[in-house]
Length: 271
Image 1 (cartoon, rainbow, N blue to C red):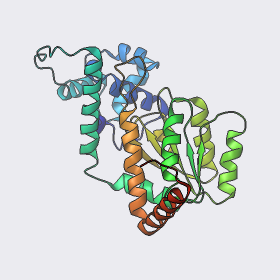
Image 2: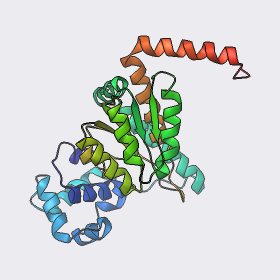
Image 3: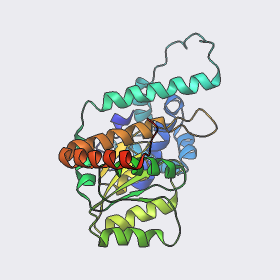
């Protein structure tokens, strides 16, 4: 379904509609324009304008296209899986789709080049994205000389972004996951206005951050449990870090060797 929206110049309201359609792909193709509007929290005329922005005569024409993309064949026989198993199997499908999308590494390489060259490298992740920002930052610090994880909100957050920029930062990684904290989006807009290139790792190519980022790396989250599963975003974070190592292999190798010597000298690990 994302292919319908790729390359289209959408307003923030239209991006919200597109995101709602992606998030509810299995049912959205059978909703009326009024129902899509209610789902996305917009007006019904906005849904019509959205369809026309994509080149369709109106929403009914777009809905026909959506229905053609949805598998409406007979439902598969009940596998007997419980809810937990179904949630994890859905994650494997997310990873399969991500693997297919990585047939082209252009976006990942562009993002890696921007981040590897930034000194320092700010990594933004608030609320649900905070642990992933810390996870990425922990490993990135082994191959990058100055990684600054920004995982706490508040009045000093913009100060820390300004400090990073003043110290020489040219790019920022922003990890933005549902429910998309408003403060995160505000910081990204401010960072872009200050001249930082923004790489967004988010759940969808039409997430609210997409319109404010220079490079978007989509990685879907699992939504079948009470709280989202972040398997996809974590995998994309490590793919991005691998690409950063590939972008500056000599530096990465040198820093890894220095860390191993340090770890051995301090007896940091049992194995």
